[in-house]
Length: 125
Image (cartoon, rainbow, N blue to C red):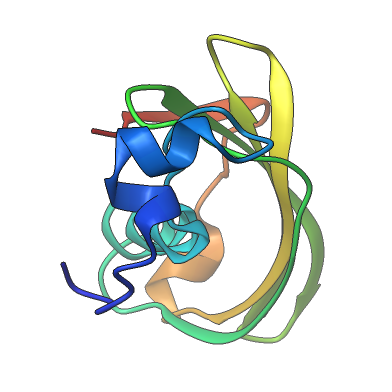
């Protein structure tokens, strides 16, 4: 466990059954980690850095579900690019997180053409 968060809502199905969620939920920071991976590995890719993340957790992602990400470029200011991101549970088609990210990209990455719509999916165990 990277975060050290051993809250039983994330780890213990018996405990989680007694909560309003009725099952284990994925750590919210894990969803943020998936978003970080998307930008740092896939696009713009290696060399870009996250300067700021503003996020709001809308609902849970349950263990075993697939997190689907949609991103949109909101603004480009020199080498700073602002994206909005919406994370959704693919299985339930429920939004789980909204975020705005400010990235600093390399000069080479300024010419990238970002995809629109669904840009990534990650199954979370």
